[in-house]
Length: 384
Image 1: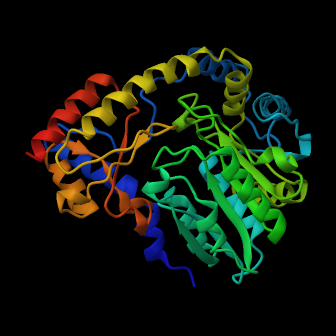
Image 2 (image 1 turned 30 degrees about the vertical axis):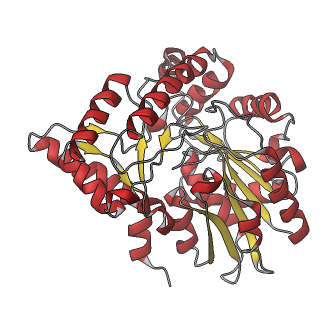
């Protein structure tokens, strides 16, 4: 039986905070937003123009459920340029947002409720929600601050059983901004081979890394046997509202996911796929420029939070999130987030991302330096 209470708790927490913050704004209270992982920058002009051109050319009808050929070819080139291999055309599937790919991928892999899914906790809320929805065995593994919030292969190994069907990797990670080491990812890939399970590698922040080197487990089998590589356009190209993602996987899994898409949504929006093609084939300058700004914002918010009484904050290596420890404030995560919202700061309690998020908050610094500085001042005042 589906536990809808679990779904509500794990799937809606982020937008509940946003809604509460918006209600306060409607009542006249000034709120600084650090709760939503949405880039401050606008979608680049050449991407928007591609969508406008597609509309003007009346490219607005149904298209192939797996995605238009032009975009799939652009993604094949993208994977070759960034991961070092070129998947076949039949390994590529276009999605109505990368978030939906978590469900499609796990639904395609899980055959029965005896099978187990291992995923990080704290982690992206969709993981736990989909595990609950599928009635699969829940094997959440704690990621620890002492390991810089990287998933430790030793901790993961303790969760593996004969029923393990898939493990979810997310590096760079939401909510902590951690980036796994190459050797850690390789060891987990070895586990998958030894115990015959799949890896769903969520790489939506793959272009957003600061000091570490990005490594994808997909290079090991080129997504032909057990790796499912999930990525999209929302973060790197500031396209959150466009809802466009993609996945590379073994062909039999693509067939299953494609069937789900054709039944559920028919196809991903046609003209938006043209925008995605322009994103991958067009200038990439905006990504580099944005990362320069994100580095400045990261330094500002980490320094500021470490000056707040009761807070301690590691420096993230990817994405645009910080995950400060607030245990010394004497508050729970929810109490601390509520306290800050009363002082004009919208952020997320760590428990939105799983039970092991207790004692932490998540702040998105995908905003302006000015907003971050104002926010730090308000946070300091809230704890003086």
